[in-house]
Image (tube, rainbow, N blue to C red; front, side):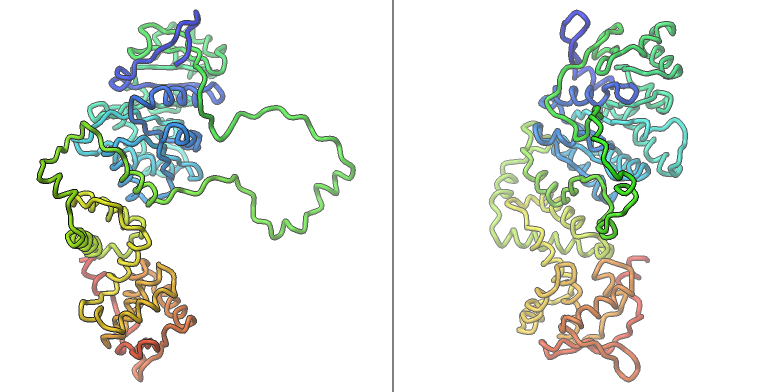
Amino acid sequence: MGSLTGGQPAKLDIEELLATRLLVQGNSGSGKSHLLRRLLEQSAQWVQQVIIDPEGDFVTLSEKYGHLVVEGERSEGELAGIASRIRRHRVSCVLSLEGLDVEQQMRAAAVFLNAMFDAEHEFWYPVLVVVDEAQMFAPAVGGDVSEDARKMSLGAMTNLMCRGRKRGLAGVIATQRLAKLAKNVAAEASNFLMGRTFLDIDMARAADLLGMDRRQAEMFRDLQRGNFVGLGPALSRRPLPIAIGAVETQARSSSPKLMPMPETVEDVEDLIFTPDPEELTRPPARRARPAPRPTTDILAELSRATPLQDQPMARSGGEAASAGGLSAEEREERVAAVLSEILADPESGYRTDAALYQDFLVRLRMRRVTGSPMPLAEFRRRVAIARSGVDVETSAGEAWATALRLSAQVSEDLQGVFLMLAVAAIRAEPCPSDARIARAYGTHSARRARRLLGYFEEQELIIVHADHSGKRIVGIPELQAETAPGAADAPDENAAQAAE
């Protein structure tokens, strides 16, 4: 970790840490993040690591050490699925929560930690789980966040520190103030690294945790940046001062430095109070942050993860041969079966393509379907065709080939809706209702469904009119076909069945 007072190396036993956990405390600027980065860099080759990063400071580990960066701006289902596969494939990652408000950060971290905690027994590999700014996720008292979010996050942190050891989860938590951290979370740590702190209550708690006399607590005020007092079975049996060593990666943010003031300019009042004409059209300035990595990229990277030699799920010779020896026809049958399973769920219409694609890749792996995964663009195309409800007889006709060609004129997210209208027109079935069109588009808004029809009509793909009773008819000129009259406000039968 660095050096002791006499220059001897300060070492930390990783195996002991996995069984005993670590608490790091220090005021802002004391060097907590530097300490965590040193720990992560030195142990990266020995143990899987998961970092809960509220400020996005640790994403730079990915450049040198290959940590997978998972942006927190995802649905709870996506985060849980990614966390589950992180444990299964033993991939180190950084959960970056930068840009989310505190309550969203708490919920995202709780979902991710709970999914790791709930992993199946065969995937209980050792993981170093580092939580920076732990007082946010395990607050001692309620704050401005909802009680539900607080309980959810506190429960996940309690599971990590109290019950995580048997599941291979070794918690490393860092906090600015011990007084703000829930006591039942802090009390489970057996190793401590205490940095500079000034408040009496925090110094007293730090001294108590280190077994020091309270009169010695004043020393925590005098610690230099990057210097900590360590104690615990993974560090030392008595309190020792440790100067944390250098790191090889840097955070994207840095400590402020003094800069010379600019030379005084004339007419400073005009410079400040006179608005720039471009300010009215200039977008508000925000800190630039990298775009979230698409879920599909993460899934592709996970699917390429090197299998472990000690993987518990050993296959028999016959299974291994069949997994690698699928014919093109057998592979296509399995792919089609997986697609059918996913789309058979009535709620699949309201899930994003990324979430469906994630589910699709997982099921393919479970079916032992090897080879390069289907590209997302092709997956979306096949989902659109499947959602249209086309049958074998209709798909064999020239009209369907024309419908497929016409659907290429709209964006991928609209192709399923257009093809559903085309199938109804080819078969002369009643025009789909607003509710059914909305579900095909992945929304509950009937108004948006009507706007989609208006958009298709603007593109001269369809013609919308009504019969004498006011029921809607959609005609497709290129197909020389139109739907039978249908009630626009009719309920969606599939959605009603799902509710039941």
